[in-house]
Length: 219
Length: 180
Image (cartoon, rainbow over all chains, first blue to last red; front, side, top):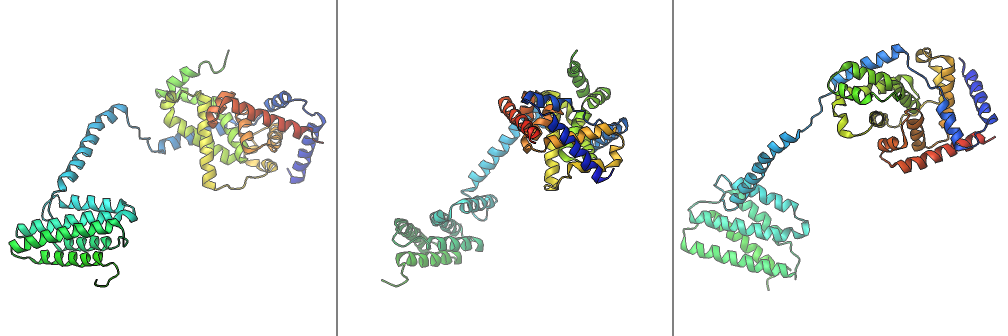
């Protein structure tokens, strides 16, 4: 059938509609309902049915969690949650040479990363004091702190130095750092000195000076 | 007697793996789903393909039908609608063929009688002035033979909203038909 013929038929159809206009909405509905829509031949039906069956067989099985399995899994989930929380809690008092220390380090990194940038200097002060304490405790045991601990300390001290001048937080950071330095110095007097303690002390003193003189000039 | 009165029994059997029951349900609904797809895509081969996709999903998930609490016809059209949306997303709004092109597909159309072809074009030309939502509602009502409440279930609307939509659609059709 040519395109011209199709267009002619369509025009004819439209004219037929215009000749007998619908008078109300129900009439239009009746007209819509009276249309004889195309039906599939038996061959087409069989073809579609076969295609549907083949596709259904190739579809991945849908995963459904049965309620019973979900209830059975609940204690396991709780156990995992509680055990992981317990491990992180227990790790907080660990030292760099101990097995749980990586959990402590990881939890601190997560804490620091999730902290908004404006509040990071305050968190850095907290984490720096932890590193200083670790260096002190290792020194008491006669051990040297690993290089990673000193690198972390340096990084946190840099963040502390970014506290805005004149802010009360900066003054508080100075007091707290001075207190930690004093504790390390006392320890250094009582115990044989080790290199990590001296390096930590030097880094803390540099930051102490920077905090006390934000302009960079000696008073 | 309501032709759908034995449907709950068929559905129960089908969900228990009775292939004959499933085939019977397919026979009852395949035409309606095919027409729905045909009127939306205006492509016979694609309509067949999408109809097969719909029934593939039905075969796979018929056992979960009762959990939904939706009449089977409405459930079926909800699947059809989802498959159609998937297809449209895949095709990224591929332009549809004009209505008159339907007559230029002798391959599939040869199976239908000439007067059926005429009705098909007639029906499509009638739907032309409608919006997408109105066209969908009209198709579900007059091709899928769903009630207003069932259309509301399929489209995620309310029965009253569907009634309003249908009224506006029919009114627009009436005006279009009355235009000189």
